[in-house]
Length: 416
Image 1 (cartoon, rainbow, N blue to C red):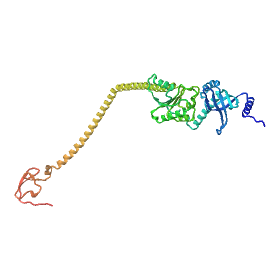
Image 2 (image 1 turned 135 degrees about the vertical axis):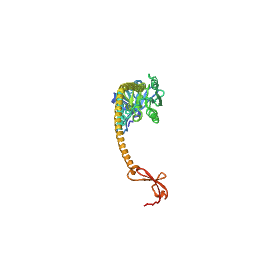
Image 3 (image 1 turned 90 degrees about the horizontal axis):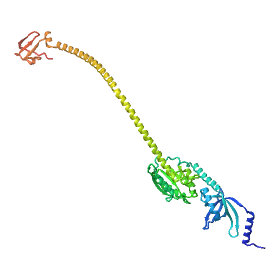
Image 4 (image 1 turned 90 degrees about the vertical axis):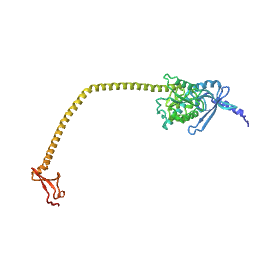
């Protein structure tokens, strides 16, 4: 029996594959284990997972030669804003090859960025739909920005050009508004964007009363470094953050998931500063308007009160005359009433006095004497009791007409 060597068998496989699969093929796959060497060649794996179980169901080794990779990589990243790295889904044109030593592999000839854009858009939509189902998608948008957003927590890289542009724009505002900014450092590109920004948000959250807004800015980085802002965890944290979040991460073509959940999305760090300055301008303009309205209101009120004073001044003489006339009439009426009351009172008292005088006249000694009564006096004092005189005393008896003197010879008591 003739036996083949392994090399012969692999050579047979190579020739068979070259005959059966001579063309270029477009395939859909996910990138894995992407790496480049010093010569510029890119080596990677293409994988496919089961959509239900997420289990690996296919895998193939791939190569992008340096002459193709130096054109393909910037083209893809510029078109998608996504790094050519593991974990993304791509549509690539490949040729199938088999090497006796290295085995089966796919050589990449071209790539279609629109497929990856569609997959990225799908993933963003899935995240936004999940946030909407959880009822948190628009929570940050519903927060009200402070009328004077002057205390700003900035999440950015301390070395980012955008951070310097942001601070300079705030400080050089034309109306001299004061802004307090504090940097919470975070990575704005690379694989640790999500982790780093979440940590910065936690630090801001620990000092909430000290700030009015949070600004997440990034400047100067490649558009391909934006994938870190398209994650569910970061989007959920920002959507539910208790302070309004303003994003300016320099992505002009379309929004990241973070942009979609933030309170306000602007294109650049400078635009974020301009937004805050404009908020201050609006508040200042409103204050100026209120000041003018207050001045006009005070002026109108003073004029109205002055008119009232003039009117009152003109009305005082006639009012005083009416008041005096009324008082004079009241006095005359009161005088008449007093005279009547006094006259009536005097008449009543005069009648009473006449009655009393009559009673006094009727009770006078002269009246009693005229009726036949007499008065006995001893030493000029009226004798009312025989106990006051003794036999032999001299007493005087006064009659209605005249009097006489007697000597007491006998007395008797008629006491009851």
